[in-house]
Length: 214
Image 1 (cartoon, rainbow, N blue to C red):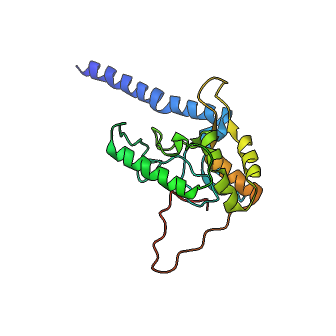
Image 2 (cartoon, rainbow, N blue to C red):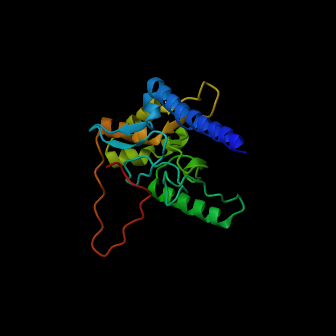
Image 3 (cartoon, rainbow, N blue to C red):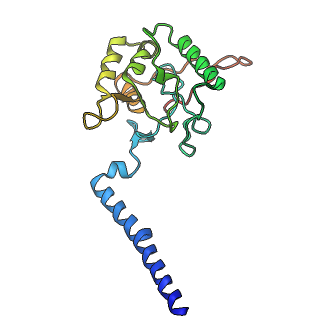
């Protein structure tokens, strides 16, 4: 019995060291050498060198001068510690009400948008943290963003086109735009948009759809 326990204990210790210590260290070391940016979280910095997010995690933007991402059901919204979808089915009345409300808000904020509203502007992703939008969903917002920044819509659309990412390996997924990277590029090229005036005391401020860049 004692010899059996000793053998089992040794096997447990060896397995723990190999799979719980040496293997993770080796994989982490290789990743740091070959893919240092990705291994450290694909962090994104602004022009002052401040970390403002990750290229892999979506975040909300409420100011009209920024492109807004797709809505999020992760925690209270865009919560990287609570990644999840809404888990609402196509027959859910709650889902229908939320989509209807979101579509109405977007129509109010984008009165000059052309064409039908792209579906990804009103639907959440499975993770709630998808940082990308379809090129159509980004272009649909371009007039509002251009007006808020005081620039021609054509200049905004030209910048959007440079941030369209193709299919992975040419065949996987669909063309997409990383909203955070695009918004940072907008600030670099056109400067930060002015914040809208604060509502007077006692007035009800409109609900924010997220946070803008610091």
